Image (cartoon, rainbow, N blue to C red):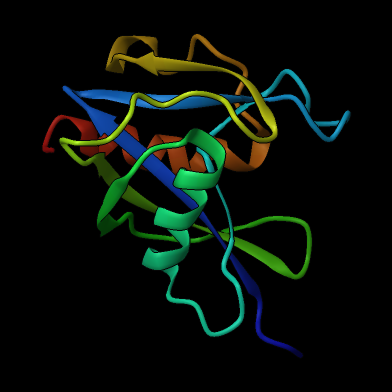
Length: 134
């Protein structure tokens, strides 16, 4: 059995709020919300992939902080790993550039106000459990 391909997701935090991104593509995922991120390229470190994906998808410069415990299966051969991340002080504000049509900063009380992609729900739960300690 081959190694799973890692997809990195960013729990991008700012002032105790979590950034959620609404998918615009592919059609079967459009309108649902996710943690932004994407596939780790061969030979790339997950933290490097996270920073690259955030720049490509949101136009921001961000630093990974720490990996959220656990990993979650996606469509084979992919698995989701999530890192908390923070915008750099000189970063542009996030904007939906690629595969997304809306962004929302969610407070802990608003985390479940959006319809998350099924595969992101356990990761968001794990992040939510950590929000009060970050």
